[in-house]
Amino acid sequence: MSLPDKFISSMKAYYASNPKLSWEDFYKSFSEMQRKGVRLNSLKVKKEDIPFFLSLQEKVPWSENGFYAEDSAWGVSSYYHAGAFYIQEPSAMLPAEILAPKPGDRVLDLCAAPGGKATRLGEFLQNEGLLVANEISSERAKALLRNIELFGIENVVITNETPEKLSAAFSSFFDKILIDAPCSGEGMFRRDPQAIKSWEKYGPDFCRELQENILEQADKMLRVGGEMVYSTCTFNTVENEEQMDSFLERHPGYEVIKHPNIEGVLEANGRLFDGGMRIWPQNKGGDGHFCVHLRKIEEHNTKNHSYYPKKRKRNNNDRTYSARTAKEAFFLFCEEMMQKEAFEQYKNTVQDRFYLFGDKIHLFPILPESFDGLKVVKMGGFPGTVKRKGEQVIFIPSHSFAMTFSREQVKEKRYLSLQGDDERVGRYLFGETIFLKDEEKESLIEKGYFLLMIDGLPLGWGQRNGGSVKNEYPPAWRRRK
Image 1 (spheres, rainbow, N blue to C red):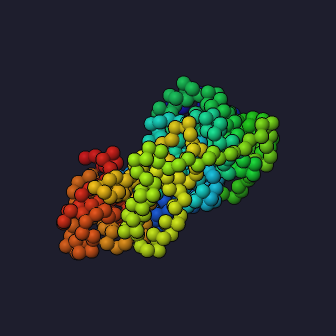
Image 2: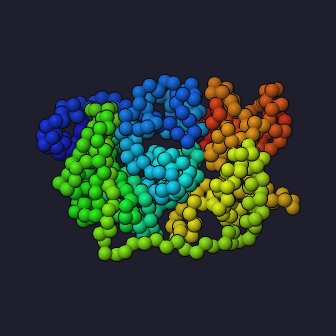
Image 3: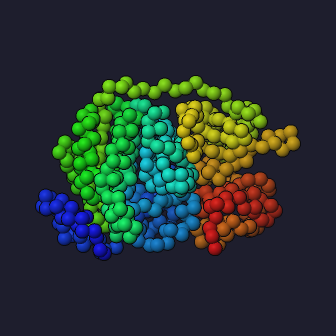
C-alpha cells in the first residue's frame, strides 16, 4: 500500500518520541488484513442461545459483547434482520464501552451514524432514560434509523441537526455525551482507498476545526457532574492529544477519567492530561482508535446554562382521532398479542409516554415540545398508526414495533418461530408469501397479525390468510434477488 509521505513523516516522528512502540510493526500493519468484528445485541441474545453464534470464539477484549469474526457470512445472515448483532470494526467498540451510561441517564451521541455506538449506548440504557442520536447528514441518518429500529430500541430520538442548534435547545441537559468525531480517517487507510484521497484533500488541520466546534457545543450541553467521551479513528496528534490539550486549556473545569489495564489498549498522554487511550492496529488487528473520557467537575463558562422544559401541549392537534380512542385501540392490540404479565408491565411503562400525532402513535421518552424547531427523524418509539374501520378505530402495528418483542412476551398463538435453516425465512425476507405447515395451522390464530421469528427473535409481522401468510415485511427492507 502506498501511504502519503506527509502521513509517514508525521507518524515516524510520533513513534520516535514513543520508544516503547514499534514503527516497523505499525507500518507493516497497513499491508495486513484488517480484522472484522460483530457485537451481539444484549437486549435480544446471548451467545450461547443460538447455534449460529457458536463460531464466535475470540472476544474483543474491551467490549462486553464484541467478538472477532472473520467469516463473511455475517453480512448476509438472516439474524442480522432480527437485530441480533451489529457488524462493527473491533476498535470502534471502545468509546461506547468507556462511556457506559446507566439506565435512566440522558445520553447524546452527537455524531451517531451509522449507529454502531448509538445501538450500544441504547443497550446500556435498557430502554430507560433518553438517548438522542444525532447525525448531520440526512442520508446517513437513514442508516442510523434502520439500525436503531433493528435493535428494538424505543427510548431514542434521532435528530438530523447541527451541533449548534442542539446546544441552543439543550443547555446543561445531558448526563453523558459521546463524540466519535469526524476525522481524517487514517485508521481506515488499509480498507478504503478513498480515505487516503480524502486525507490528501482535507487533512488533519481541516478536521481539527470541525472537532473543536463540536467539542464547544458538547460542553454547553453537558451538565456539571456529567461525562463525555471524545474519540477518533485517526492516528495523528493534531486531532487527538493536541485537540484535547486545547480543549482542556479552554475548559479547565474537566478531569480525565482513567481506565487502566484494558488488554490491547495503551495509554496516551498530552501536555495537560494523562489517561487517554489508544488502540493500535498492530496490537489487536483493528483499525485503531483514540479515546479520552472526561468528567465535567465545574462550569467554567460565564453563562449559566440551564434547561427548562416547555409546557406539555395537547395530543393530536388536528383531532382526526382522539388520543383516548387511539390509546384504547393500541392497548387492545397489545393485550391480544402479549402474555398477561408482560402486557401489564408494558402498559405501566409506556402509559405516560403515549402521544398521538395525526394518525401516528409515538412513545416519547421526553416532552416532544423539547424538540420544537429541530429536524427529527424518529420521535421515540413508533408502535404504529390508527385508522377507522366503520365506526371502530383499529391499530396497525409498525415494523419497528415488531422488533421490540421477545418470544417470552408474546402469546403462543401469536408467533411463528422458524429455525434458522427454514427456507421460509429467506422467502419472508424477500417479501414473498409463505405457507404454513399443518401443525402451525392448528397453533396460530385464525386471522389477524402475528410475529414471524427466527429462533425466537422477531423478523416482522405477518397476517394469516388460511394456510398462507400475507407478508408484512417492509418493501424498503426486503432482500434483493
